[in-house]
Length: 156
Image (cartoon, rainbow, N blue to C red):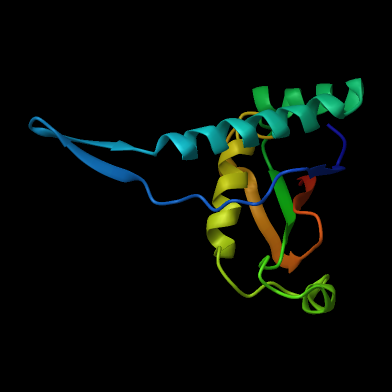
């Protein structure tokens, strides 16, 4: 692996926060589950992330696949994510236009948005998220929802 590799890609998905797991009492046991609509979002995210991986060049895919198979000692990944969220549909066009590009300070929470991305990228762009040592993330208003991701692989 080279000393440093940077990959940048966009996901044409509406950012969704990872909700809390649900609990159900089944006989004497408690089972944990996510509602079906959450499972569908998992599948959408996984499909989009695998599509972003497939869109990379052959050499880039090979480099990342090697990292996923055999995580090198000293590997650290810096993750940068920009979540683009649409303003409320009830706002006037003028207010929406004023918001575009500015920081988003409403729900969903940034940490829950990150959990969804980090969990879905595991096994595709890295073996385990314990190699992520740095995260930069922000939410902003945009006309078109989406997720912009930059991964920086560093070997020390």
